[in-house]
Image 1 (cartoon, rainbow, N blue to C red):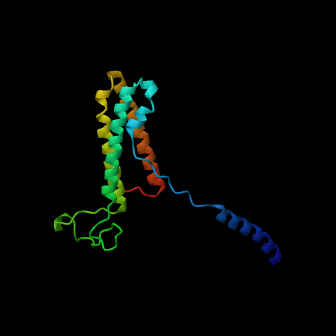
Image 2: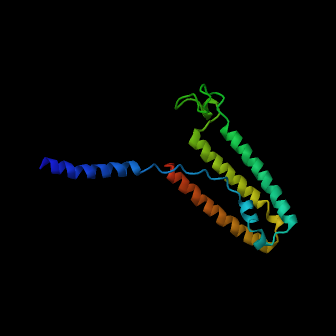
Image 3: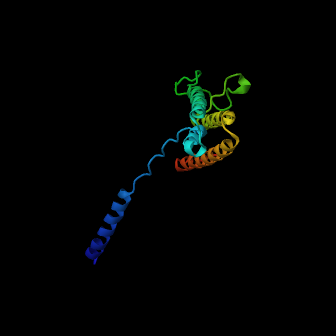
Length: 170
């Protein structure tokens, strides 16, 4: 009787072990490029009947946006000069430092990432609003719709990546 029980449970145990080993960890979420409403609008150049002069003006504003985003990344990625570790993390403990002590606030990695995302989104909005004089009235109306759809989709993808990474906070 014991022999039959072993023979019956051995295949089941091997099957369970094989299934457990076959499951892999989900892939790490891909990084999402920064939002770029101007590029989204330029992707609809034919639909909007954007001429060469308009496209050149839009590209100039978009290049300025890229420069501003790079500055924001550099500013927020800079390591904390007061850190003893060089990791960019503050070397002080909770309750020490900060605005009351006159020391600059140095957010942790997740906070820096959120601050960068907010800065980049604000840059994108300001840059897009600067494009209004480039368009004719009907072009501007449709460009705003395209940019809004892009931003909503971008926000949804960003939130999905945060959930996939287990990083939903607040």
